Amino acid sequence: MVTIGHDAHLKTSTLTVLDSNGKKIMRKKLNNDPDKLLAFVRQFPGEKQLAIETCYNWPVFHELLKNEVNEFHLLHAKKLRSVIDSQAKTDGNDSEEIAHLVHSGRRLVRSYIADLDTRCFRRLLRTRVNFSLDITRIKNQIHAIINAHTFYSQRPTNFKDIFCRRGLEYLASIKLPEQERFIVDRLLVKKYELERQRDEFDEYIKHIDFHPNDLRWLQTIPGMRGKLFKYILLSEIDNVSRFRHARALVAYAGLIPKENSSGEKNRKGHLRSECNQFLRWALLQAVLPAILADKGLRTYYKSVKERKNSSTARIATARILLESVYCVLKEQRPYRMMQAVNRG
Image (cartoon, rainbow, N blue to C red; front, side):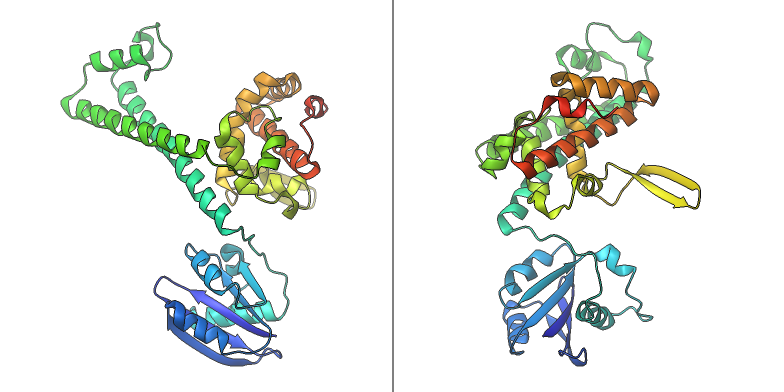
């Protein structure tokens, strides 16, 4: 089987070709023109495999070349950096290293390739989530300005949220320096615009039908309010069978801490940063409505909160929720209210 190592950039690609014995037979740098790339791959008869590392534009190469090769390998870029040992960092050397690693059958971290519809839906949902995150950042900026000029004890007690009607009236009455008043007013305008666009996304998403069979089981889990959270879970997980067990899915969502153990020492740190941030965000958002709906989860949340703190309790409960998601989707059955109670 011919092996092609593909080092891709925005304008150009460097491809290295190995024969069935692992001997380099060609290396070429091409402009990213579809016809040229197709012609290059098609010139090699028989079975062939192509490997490319994850980059922001890998999907366009996948859609172009997936039917031209017998195997299309998508390699985890960050994990790949740790095994490539080129002394000279060049596109040609990178493509050759990729080709040799795949040809040798070395165990590499491969990334899951979702279909085109799922990838597009993910991008839609992730953009929608970013609207919420941007709105939260704007609110935090406004809070920072207000806290710099007023004491919390001086605020009226007839509202809890400064962005409700009464809160906004209070916000308008506060005496601020001219420049900071200008900042607050402009941030409020931006917040309203983002909220309008967020609502447009919600209306658009409402009419999309995605994985209806899985959705039927997922909506039995407490905390899965509205389509947004359920669709984020379904699109980011996509095929639950790709995870060997529930712990693998929990690790994918970054709901387990980093660990540095050696000998008798066992050190655990913050949550993993190399994870699916959108999946973790959705699970953490679902915790509060979930503990209101499920007595067992509420009991577990309170027990962890008493022993640790509210942040740890939220993460631990999110972990249980995700394990429940795995079981529900894997076994195609409804959520069982008592399954979380035994996790003391």
